[in-house]
Image 1 (cartoon, rainbow, N blue to C red):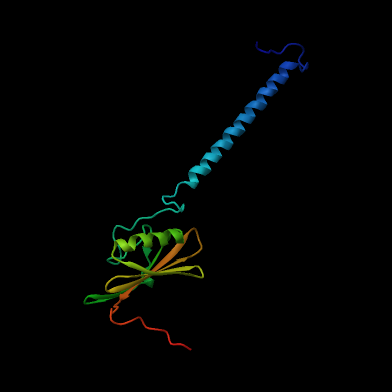
Image 2 (tube, helix red, strand yellow):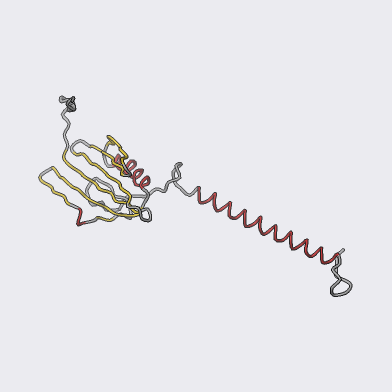
Length: 178
């Protein structure tokens, strides 16, 4: 049976209460729906990373600036802070790249892509906000320095490639004792 309003204009009968109850229930339903959508959006946003650590992944530029050394997409060469020399089969280069990515994402990029180019990771250091990765191959060493600039996930990458030779007969140099 449907409740209808009867009586005088200011009567305030039970039909008014039924209408108010429906309005309260409708408002509560809307609140639950909006809260559910917000929760769903939070879950989806948290699960958007490609890796288990929740970080984005970036790919390499289609054409690297240095042969055999990948550069993340979206990073460009800062020419005024870049130099390279080549003589015969040896090269020396210091390149600076600037772009937008989290420092950890860039670190993961180099951890993943340098071995694909024939490099072996030798060391990794994090000192005062700057991350240094060192790689070696048969004839060169490559140091990758990743430093945040502090604005909108912007960071710089400095890549230094230089000739390298490790004689298997010669042990690594020892530091003199004081």
